[in-house]
Image (cartoon, rainbow, N blue to C red; front, top):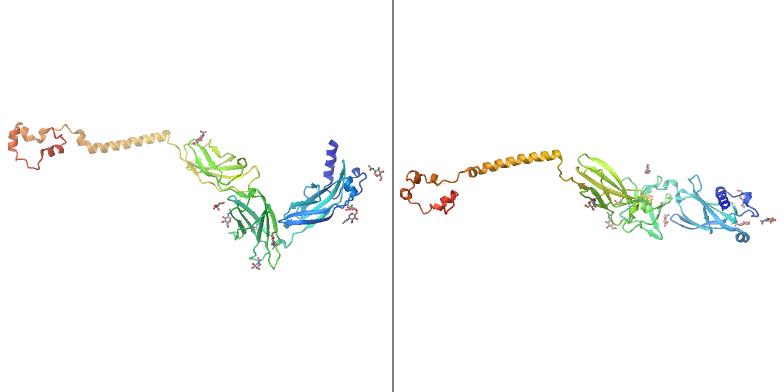
Length: 410
Ligand SMILES: *[C@@H]1O[C@H](CO)[C@@H](O)[C@H](O)[C@H]1NC(C)=O
Ligand SMILES: *[C@@H]1O[C@H](CO)[C@@H](O)[C@H](O)[C@H]1NC(C)=O
Ligand SMILES: *[C@@H]1O[C@H](CO)[C@@H](O)[C@H](O)[C@H]1NC(C)=O
Ligand SMILES: *[C@@H]1O[C@H](CO)[C@@H](O)[C@H](O)[C@H]1NC(C)=O
Ligand SMILES: *[C@@H]1O[C@H](CO)[C@@H](O)[C@H](O)[C@H]1NC(C)=O
Ligand SMILES: *[C@@H]1O[C@H](CO)[C@@H](O)[C@H](O)[C@H]1NC(C)=O
Ligand SMILES: *[C@@H]1O[C@H](CO)[C@@H](O)[C@H](O)[C@H]1NC(C)=O
Ligand SMILES: *[C@@H]1O[C@H](CO)[C@@H](O)[C@H](O)[C@H]1NC(C)=O
Ligand SMILES: *[C@@H]1O[C@H](CO)[C@@H](O)[C@H](O)[C@H]1NC(C)=O
């Protein structure tokens, strides 16, 4: 077993070169032919399917276990990518074809621990069109769950007014651009609308175009929607009196809770102190360090992290505000107490002034009104009546009494 691992290690170490030629393990294996008829059998949106013939004899094919080794290198890269071992003489891979790429394969025959590799068979796939017609600064954003905007800058050598076309494909479905636009920075863009993108699948993109004057170099890429997703902001942000902030994931967001991270921005409104807090997975947070005597506001934003990371944060949610409860805080209490005292004093003064007469008035004394009756007629009612000019019909005795707050019956 250890021997096998050692052999494998040596094999992989050496097979990175152009050919495998270690004499120790060749034994009776004659030199292997390299594969022939290496060809592209399908090409769509930068996805290429290759096939080849091993060109090994029947004898070798039956006597040995034949496999193929595949690797690739972009023209602008320094090294070949890591190798893939294949059972069948075909292979499919995605490429950024505008960079130009070399691919190569070789035969490997094994028998027990013995094996031998052929020379490589190489294919070069150069990009078409002038490099200066290639778009640059390409980027996309997925938003509102299924919408996608992609923007790019036209190549330098492209005649002004040239419209690039963007083609998208997800699984086997081609997606149409809903509309093309030019943004404020002069970048061209394409908007894909409602139900356009399935966020769980990669999107293959090709941007090409044509102009009679110059063939345009097509741009090929793949975007992983979740990695360029700008989620809708969280909503229903609330702060309870016990300083627990709660919020909800935006509707339509199906990302697993444990893949989401949130940022809370806590603003002390009177001091304008801003603090950023980080929350993973949970949709609530207890503000342990917040001072419950201060006014503050909280807003929340989110993104995917931990199951691949999204490039963009959502926008901030609406703000939730916290107003401290009135408490018996020393200074405020004294101040409030003084104000109450002063107000009470003022109130009392007004009341006293208004109702003073009534309040300090002695019990009504009939003697005062009926002065003559008592002073001059010595309480002789008859005499007093005789003296008095007969009471007019309207001079109702009762009226007088009411005016003087004396009960009629008295
Ligand atoms: C290798 O080939 C030689 C003759 O070319 C033969 O004598 C020998 O038995 C072979 N060995 C094996 C392991 O097949
Ligand atoms: C492998 O390549 C070397 C030189 O690159 C060549 O001499 C040799 O003949 C090749 N082997 C085969 C089986 O084509
Ligand atoms: C296949 O290999 C043989 C040698 O075994 C060689 O003569 C022939 O040219 C090869 N076929 C092709 C298509 O390269
Ligand atoms: C492309 O974007 C990068 C930063 O993302 C910027 O530095 C560069 O200037 C941009 N190039 C063009 C041609 O706009
Ligand atoms: C978000 O998508 C829904 C349906 O998918 C749509 O009704 C709504 O208008 C979209 N919101 C924005 C801001 O585009
Ligand atoms: C996407 O493009 C549309 C159409 O130009 C625009 O209304 C919208 O604001 C863009 N959204 C984002 C997130 O870039
Ligand atoms: C080709 O370039 C000309 C400007 O030179 C422009 O008016 C025309 O729209 C372009 N054609 C296409 C198909 O982009
Ligand atoms: C651009 O790419 C699409 C999708 O691969 C293809 O259907 C179309 O013919 C291409 N157009 C040009 C001008 O190359
Ligand atoms: C804080 O209050 C909320 C509702 O007002 C309640 O659901 C939560 O359990 C409380 N938390 C603590 C730690 O008391």
